[in-house]
Image (cartoon, rainbow over all chains, first blue to last red; front, side):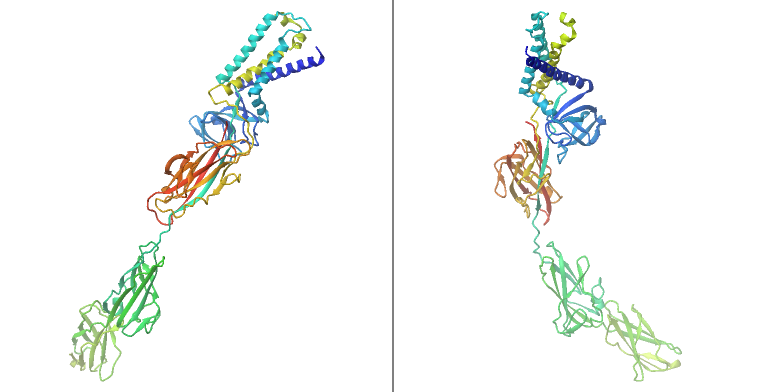
Length: 444
Length: 195
């Protein structure tokens, strides 16, 4: 044998022996220490474990698994998945693991319920490529040739030296051994006891398309409706106070409602005193009817009222109020026109006048037909041609009585007016008083 | 058995130990190959080791992760009761490297007014006339509730391949307040497939 051939034989035997030993040791280690070699078949765990890396995993029970561990589990499709734990929820004696590849932007869709998992402790870059190549058909062929050559070189008859053993027995032994070993390997693989595993450290990606849905905007074509004006249309009353809106003293009120959906926007009223041909400009009554409509403000609910009107601004007379309103969509309500009259209060009637001789007080009684309640009554009295300022008689509940103390020893007349809303009625009938000391008299 | 009692140097030098040890290769590779190729169980599979990056792209070739695509093509504004709108969205495998993936089609609609009244019909490979999808393969059921829709696309995408996903959104006949809105999203999670 030449030197070259001898060297080649030695090299082949050494390589075959070393690789075979490595295989046996890793099988042994796998069984003894529960170590599983894993080939990373994608880069989703990069850069910790690149594609083609060989990871070494050791089976640990579920309670020992922690977030951040890289574990290998089997998914619902039966594929092995090796990703990092991002969440672990203990369930019974196991855990439900949520895994995510380091380069994946979303966790795996599947949550893995496990009682134990192979935790990857370290990886050998590129070693997985070697293992993958070895397990390919071509790789298997190369290995088979390598082993065959080793066996032949180790056991075949050597021409340069005598062989002490019987060649037939050796050949039978060797053939049986080779067949036995191959059978054992096949059995190992078929039984699933081989500790090697190729792992799908698969990639995920996600993309989202977004848009916005909406329903058509409601088109409000329904105008607001005006109703329930106060003072009511065609009403009349003695004095403004008796006639004006109860919920907002001395003001004009109206209800405005909108069912179209957009809501009432503005309510206006144009107030004209027709008896004097004047209109209200917001602060005072001015001549003519050219005032702009005045805005009304919301009182409560659907009721709107004027602001700024007073009893003094609203003397006896006839008035018209023209209400207008719009909703937010711009629809105008059908205008509402009302008219009302502020009248002079009814005239009271003096029914008796008594005086006790020797005293100074005259006691008057009178009647008043209403309607309602007068704000007050005033007593006009005077004598000797002189006129004195009236005094207020505060009794506003029937039967009405009042006391007057005219200047002593003066003769004169009593007359009473009713005051409603600042408006005085006509003078009542007259009662005359005269006399002094014990001869005082008072009568119609 | 006289060779066992032979001088150690001679025994080893003849390479029989190494030859026997090399049988370990057969044992190991036999085990790996058997489980890889001949067992029905999928727990041990060899596959191509793939490097690269997965990219599922919508209408664009942005390769952005994660991609959010404002889908102007599907305008759902002013949806009248019973009305529907449809548009086609190309879903492309723009992965670098030989990465095949499967993907799902998920849909969500926000809100409690308009959102629950939206229905979706998805047709892979379908065409749109602007209001309805036709042709292709129906994914899930027709007029399924949009919010929570979650169906597998039913077909894998190899690199550079794309699917035209026709999405039809229909508003039910239920009367709703005006100007109700709902943010609608269609999500396409892809998972690498080994084959």
